[in-house]
Amino acid sequence: MKNVDEALAYITDFSLDDLNKLKKAVTDLIEQKSEDEQKLQDIIDFAKSKGVDLSKEDLQPSKANDGRTQVKDKYRYVDDDNKEWLWTGRGRKPKWAKAMSDEKLKSCLI
Image 1 (cartoon, rainbow, N blue to C red):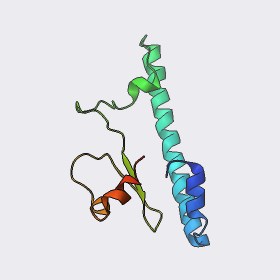
Image 2 (cartoon, helix red, strand yellow):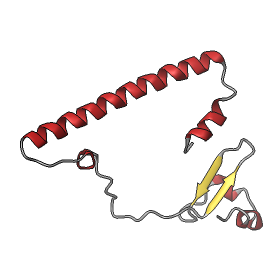
Image 3 (cartoon, one colour):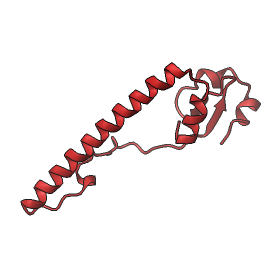
Image 4 (cartoon, helix red, strand yellow):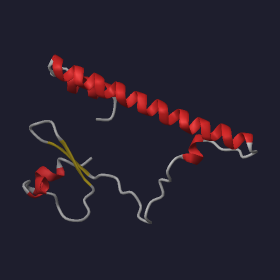
């Protein structure tokens, strides 16, 4: 899921009990993220009081890669359960791609 609309579409069939459990989990997650944000702000304020200029981005974990470049997906397949499968076209062919004919696989090109 990539956005709220997709999440809402996914949870519409949840039971009331499941929705209440989800609500608690989301509330807990919001509290944790709020605490984390406050801790970051406290560190930034402390650093500023010592004459060091920091931003939240400076305190985030590095997203440095391991020297490899990110390759865009070349094939996209949605199965009968609406599960999306992606493949770059590199490396071993996934099972879902092996099961397809070449013509059907060409229809999955992005």
